[in-house]
Length: 353
Image (cartoon, rainbow, N blue to C red; front, side, top):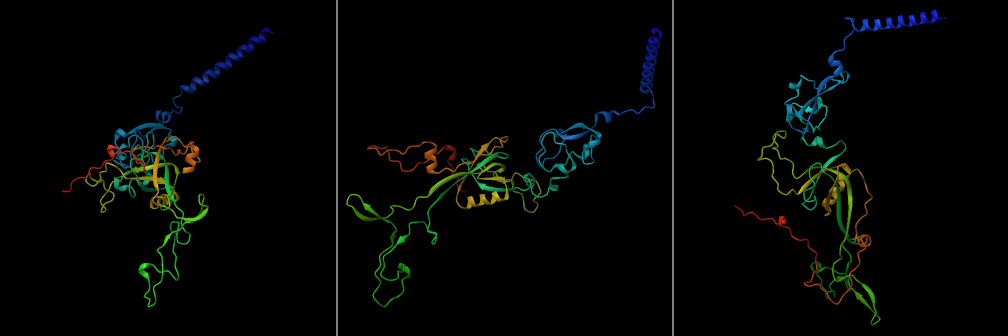
């Protein structure tokens, strides 16, 4: 029994020794395949080391190399040693830090970019539309290129006659026969028509003191009713102010400082919106609506169901009470609220030469 255990133990020692010997021969065999350092660490390709604006030339300080597995390297990438094919080219669009650069992202020269260089910043399915603006509508120019904004629009409404499409109330006139305007009366050989000048249409009310009906007319023209609403949310600004003006003869050349229109106070802003929203913005602009923008955090993707602001909603939402009629009042008399005039709003007219 004891001898059997010893034999089994010796057999195990022999098996282990043979296995160790086989492994050792495999490691030290000069004919065994050797894994190259390049295959083990990967092939170095070029990435953007910092933000490269659209149209900017590619320089060495804007690049860095990082290894990637050899199986992922394609012919469209720039590997280490091919920097001569990359440096000096032009970014077709803005490259963010860490972007793997491929041949489709760069061009041979600024003229290689199709159309205006800022056109490629507009995402597919979107369009760029310009609307008038000012310092108040752009959060004191805190809204500029690349900002995310909400767009508000305020407009006024009046009641009109559906047929005439004129502001109510209509004018009325008393006549015995057909009424002709003063300058369009036909020549008549008979006695002139008896006419009265037209008056504004009113309504019959019962006077509470004398208990008699009286005909009242408006003391002034109809007052428009104001309404404001947020019409667009999370819109990206393409450009604040004018784009660079380049000579028409060569639209792809880089403009000189004399060709670039300098503007101290931008009065136009370009937004990237859907084609349908661009039509709505055109309507707001040409209908006389006042458009303003509010700045939002670029990481905020939330949407809200905004409620229109009218006189009724403002009084209700903010619990505003109507002022009482008192036997005293402010002096001087205040008929119109006017915002204070700020020093930067004063425009000094330059004397003509």
